[in-house]
Length: 305
Image (cartoon, rainbow, N blue to C red; front, side, top):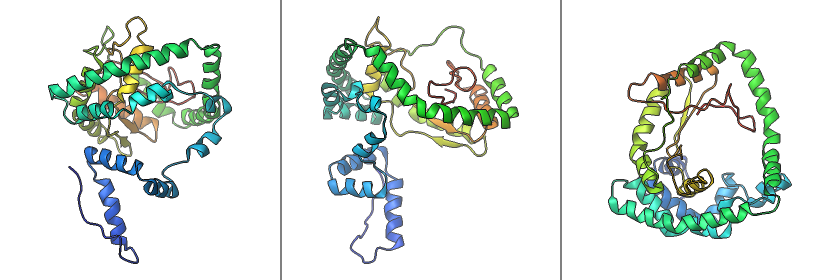
């Protein structure tokens, strides 16, 4: 299931070899063991305290103190008491973990569907309650503005420098994006069931990771980030309600269940990665979001999805 070994912490002083054993153990944890270890750490105040001292966890009060008042006073839906309780319910969490581990087990699919039917009305009630709040739209606009204003100028300045210093790479990226051949009609997921959608994602995840790594390997100097987990079911449920008002619960337009990122240091690398996806005979690109030249994010962040 993962790395195993004996580490003696009683020796004084602790040797470099012992420290390396600890690091190697953490680096080789399997997804299942990683979940178990992370749960155990959360239940151990001393472990959390040590992680804080090492700088891996910021104190909530310290983080909140840095936020603008509009953000500090705004709670997101998943933090609502009833929703938070539903999302952290052990049965709901276990059903998602089981799906990622054994997606082809019909009993696992049924168990996840049962848990989703419990969470869906709780989420929907919280969303409908929020939508009835007075001045919700102005509040949301203020929150979005407060969240973006500190970054927008920085990202814009970086982009202006990139655009001027790497004209050749920018042109290559424009050409690569323009060369992508998309289907003539919009492509949706093949299921409307959130549980089946997660099943499909879990089944294809290993192939997806292999493909991304293969494409990235053809371009020198890029970095690949591939999360161990899939998109959380709570977020999927939220999107099926907020984005499908006419058909709540329908998951056929929810994307990015399996995720990954290729980080590039220049635009020529980005062009090469885009071309790499386009030239694969085993891939069909169905959707592209160009946030470099066509539509940068509200906060100024630029990428290609």
